[in-house]
Image 1 (cartoon, rainbow, N blue to C red):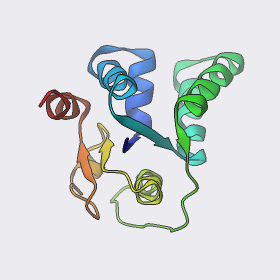
Image 2: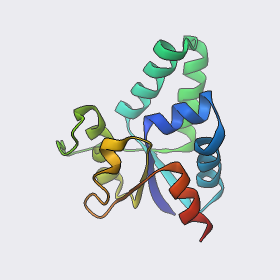
Image 3: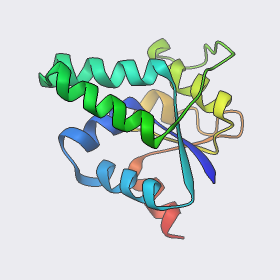
Image 4: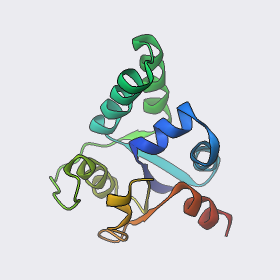
Length: 133
């Protein structure tokens, strides 16, 4: 299985809007990938869904459980300060801890770091193109 980290913005976009981010998550779920996630990413997904999109706590609990069951929970050991947006460093920390091969994100600050310590950083659309090859 290929370890992969999905950024908060991709999860939220897939859940709320669908489209390419949802397609990317479907390919990840069906392919030779193992999604890795950390507690800070889970917390951020919940926060955004509740605060920005008015999801109920019950619905956000259900989504949290779904993400936990479909992913490997990793605990980052190292603190990383590499991104121009410090809030995005948690994604890098998760990827390093998981020994991920790919980060899927729509975040420009993270995309500018591609590759980071040997981890590819791609958009959902680029991931879909790469996965089709």
